[in-house]
Length: 125
Image 1 (cartoon, helix red, strand yellow):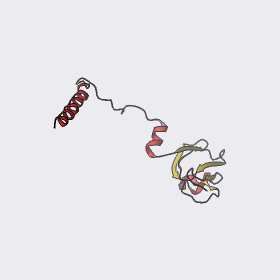
Image 2 (cartoon, rainbow, N blue to C red):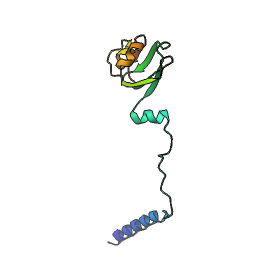
Image 3 (cartoon, rainbow, N blue to C red):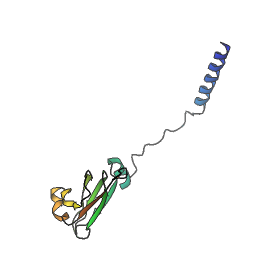
Image 4 (tube, helix red, strand yellow):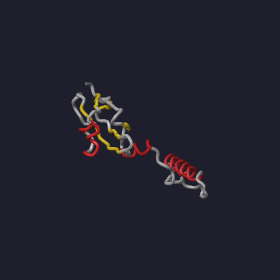
């Protein structure tokens, strides 16, 4: 019984010493609502692995990995850039045109851009 009371007393002393270190005038951590979000933080927030910029006249191909989430930014010459996000859920390793992935408004300019899909890092094939 004496041993149990010694263990209880040492536990009580250790708990009191933890609370003694906190000061009542200590400021809580500030929220970062006013900070600007970078492109990397925005990509992380929505789950994008990479961003690929495509210029319809200059880009001929893009390399991606299977199961990767890609943000495609399409910059037409003299126009405003558009973007779309796709997950590379394909099983074949055959190249195909990017126009198959793009929304209808962007598909016409991306017929000459080919997508080459490599196996993901966890795959044995």
